Image (tube, rainbow, N blue to C red; front, side, top):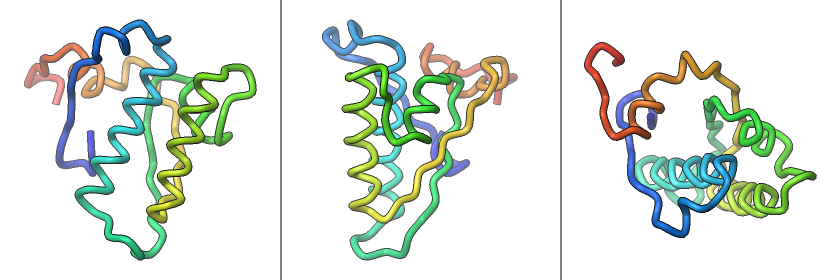
Length: 118
């Protein structure tokens, strides 16, 4: 969910589908940040804080620690995301959500949102 108003979803390419879920989570965060930048940022804007909520603890830690000492893939993706954030004046922070409370994102990842889940 972007900015409490809009949602985004898509499908992974066949090669992306082979990546570990932790890397896919970070790639999804990167895509979300890109959409946020496109909708709300202009070069030179003042700093803006962005809270990323996820049920993936490895991706959450990779954001908050600006990388992962145990996974080269997560390290590279986190570095790219933080580089983008820095370029656009964003300060990122991730918050871990229990999987049961991450209903909207889980529904979007399955491609269907039940009205009762909104």
